[in-house]
Length: 121
Image (cartoon, rainbow, N blue to C red; front, side, top):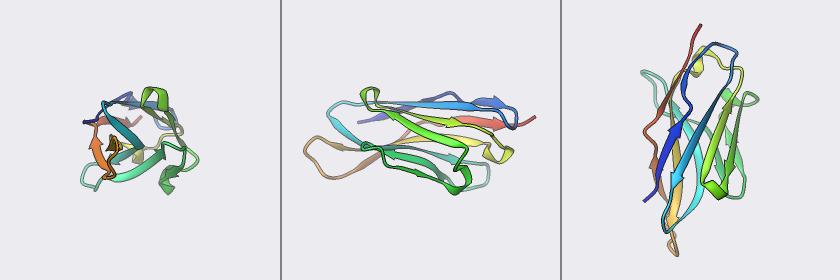
């Protein structure tokens, strides 16, 4: 079982930056991909960015050029550097981890508890 734990959320003014971190405890699993999703009030959860174990990255169009996802495989930790934040980036940000058990093919997904990011002046 993998349990992601997020940190780094908070209140920030428009145009400023914030960095989120997510550490995934792991035992007997192979982590395939890690990523970030977000959910604003009254809206569905949406993809922000993902990164695979080989370094392939995918961003939502709304954050391209402003957000950067990175990963430290040795620490099973993923980061989201958020620059030029806008009010519309306000949401609860969730970390997700896709993994398999050793010698198994089925991919499981675990979610963190979420961290609030509020962009407001």
